[in-house]
Length: 151
Image (cartoon, rainbow, N blue to C red; front, side, top):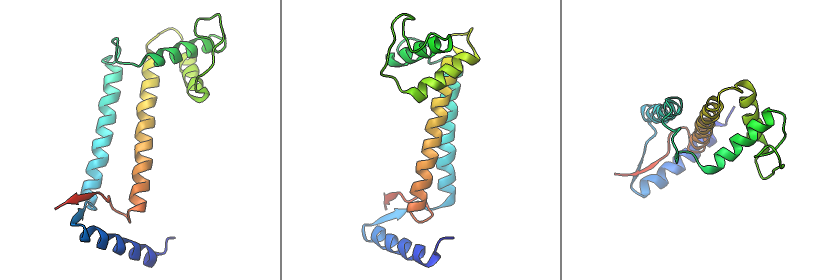
């Protein structure tokens, strides 16, 4: 359990600093929920874009992504970490490659489904990190969304 008196004093101190600068705080629960809904909606649009194929055209994925996808595909086929199936390669993030390898093992026949699954995982990781950072800001800010806004 947190010490509420200490928490209240720090929040009061923050409020006095904010008021002295002429700012107001967006600590209203409705605003916090609206921001969570907005971030979740953006994630939903991104996932929709992935699965509708809107990101499949040339130029929408970074070139490095295809190196990862190719290495993951070769790993799933049991050829080890190689881009071309002949020479070994390095310089990749092992944890992400493990994810890609698992996705290519799940759906080896279709070249796009593992890519779409990887992009979906990326969106979900973005959403998770946004939630964690938001919770940290919320906790540090004294229990409200502490964004300085001018009057």
